Length: 342
Ligand SMILES: Nc1ncnc2c1ncn2[C@@H]1O[C@H](COP(=O)(O)OP(=O)(O)OP(=O)(O)O)[C@@H](O)[C@H]1O
Figure (cartoon, rainbow, N blue to C red):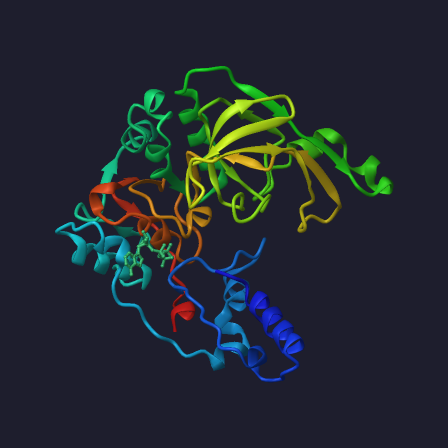
């Protein structure tokens, strides 16, 4: 979900451009969204900060007229007999209506909602069956992913899946530096290399031909945007050639260069020169928002920790038989801030 400040900035810009002091310069704006989904991410923020960053906390919200869509098309399109029930189960999850166990604070997922698996390897086998052969099929690859709430869980899954593909591992190390010369002595290169920053490529990027990667920056919109998934075709010393596997430009080959990236939320200025990509067989639930999948795995060994994450993860597919969940005793945490839904 967009931060309320983005919309407030658009409001000021349109007022200025159109020299019209009415809201949005007198234009009608169509917004589409679902407050059951995740709220804007506020680094190191509390739930109150997230709620405050949401559009409902902006004075602009008083001018919004809400119209509701009533059919879950992703589910409806499956023509599955469970469609009506699955749509309702998803809504109950998103609305925080699934009963919570008073002692553990967890909900129990039912057998008619998803398919349960016991280990990470079984999860991988169900979502990416016979990956050592199927990785060459882009349509097959684009329709499946494993999701987890935290980056660390995602990294572990990605390494395991990548190891199932034959071929040499190519390592690309980033060049990390401090931009302010006065700070150089305080931040040794080894420390900079060790930084794992959300939304940033790793220092030690290890890839194989056939690996699925995700672009982390808008390199060449609309073709190469933050979130575009690709399959690696050729690994050269200074360039990665890859094939886009999702969206309108699926099937096109592109070249990705190293670019300098500067994180905005660190207390010191630091620059990482690296390919702006991450492995993407598995991805975080927040990154998966907006995607439709034919088969989705969810690793809930570490519970979801923020509003709407479980709802977003489960609603990527249209039927229960396509949803594989790894969790202990079918129990997990469903975080829903009722204030975001009021
Ligand atoms: N009116 C429609 N007729 C046919 N198919 C539709 C219609 N609306 C949506 N779909 C299909 O349903 C799926 C989900 O649509 P879309 O991604 O636009 O929904 P969304 O609200 O953005 O989902 P989410 O926010 O959960 O990611 C897509 O496959 C889309 O093509």
